[in-house]
Image 1 (cartoon, rainbow, N blue to C red):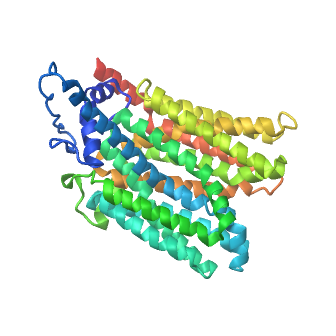
Image 2 (cartoon, rainbow, N blue to C red):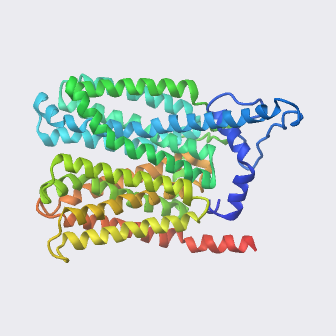
Length: 475
């Protein structure tokens, strides 16, 4: 199994093979040089010879051309995969401001309309288990395009749904199809990158996925100023069409035929069972899922805690929510641009998990009244630290887990995504278990999940063993 991506050998390998990685990226997202191709694991990627005599006039400009092409290809990678990653949160959160209107128009109870959110979330969780193995068998491109087409149809039908029951059913289908973007985006990153480069790219995707939930309700609110709730699904349909066209035109296949799995459902299940049998992969997956549950608990409880218990206005809550998201984004970018490659990924992950535990513990003490009556400011600081630390935990657990699964990146991505959504979905309802007058349940859920993530990281991943093996290899 591949070892930790922050090892000295891997950093050296990535440094010496930078041009080869650029060739692989260019080939996947547009025509590159004739020699460029995605090589099977364990083989080298041919790199073109230098173009002629460098002392001749004009040669320097010629040598810069591949660098420009590689940068453009890298930007295209980010845009396409970022769009696929942002589509699910847009589908979930653009719809939030319209819930009261949907309740009135469809003459349905609020609890029934809330099921439209649950159905979409459940679809995203379960859809990844289907699409991931499909992408390992048939490649990334075809399942992704199929999923996008189904997403477009389901979203368009949601716009004309005459009843809450039909809306729930097609929101479920929308989530199932939208899961293709989540799982295949991660698998494509695994196809194109390795080691610290993969961790850096996940931090870049976190920038986009962190912005999307913040701007989505704002976009939904503006759409409602000019149309009704059905217009939100029309906008999502248009976004789906545009993104599908971008994928069809520019996303080339990143999984070579010789690396695909030829088996059926039974083979896919055996592959997943084998992945879960890998103690370290399971450790990173569970740790990432529990950390994600901390985030879900925050999203579920913070509107109630900030507005109802601490008396903030909706505008103040929106500002605090945005500030916390910005903190997550900034720390994620610090992780990708400054920490990854300079420090061991396990050490960076350990710092992130420790910060989450400390913040959750402080929130529990404050909400339980151990320090007396606490106002909104200390609570907001604790939530900010907790959210910001997610920028160290989320990308590094994904990278560490996927680094061990080059042979089945689609199935591994499906397990990672499904576990995160399911654990988060279980944790979210628990934050209101003690009623509407205390924030203690939110802090308890966050602390328990954070401690569980640390236990999984320490007990299953056992990072000190990675460090020992790297030290031995270096000697």
